[in-house]
Length: 226
Image (tube, rainbow, N blue to C red):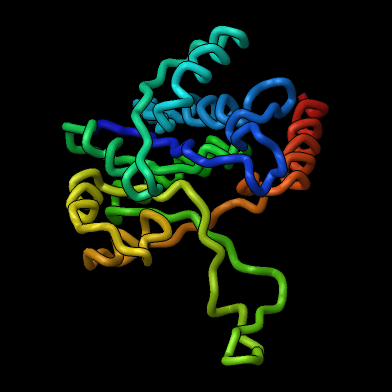
């Protein structure tokens, strides 16, 4: 069985209030993307790592790898105008049947255990999407007002979103829809029943400056335990 990891790194730094795209911001002295690649390189399934970057970021990334002596093997794939097209470009490179994990580059705190669990669950169920239960109260917009909603009926979806390669490649043959917010929504559109598995509270998506501060704190705590 062949295993793959598609790491989608096409984002900008707009909400971080910085000109540097989020995936290149430094986290404990290394770009965020390097932490994410490193996490997947530790998986016992030894996935082939495909990193999707916008064309104008390829040389910048090469320079960063040289600067930080980063030599974990990975392939660079050209990104698209939407996340959908970026993932599709990477899927088109995959020619062998197997299991593919699709992950946000700016979720660098993911553990080896969650990666392996997603691969394992996909092998038996065809797919596995990491998700956690919300802990806050939830309200649903209803016209100009809101109403309380039962949080037990909701999940907060994370990545990795992991699939049998043949199934997800087939799903990505559908033309792009605005409703395709992640890989699970593309798969579901093709009739695939989504299998959720327990994600991790620390598997945050770095979107705002406070997220980077939190990630620094988590990594510092891990380092102090070693």
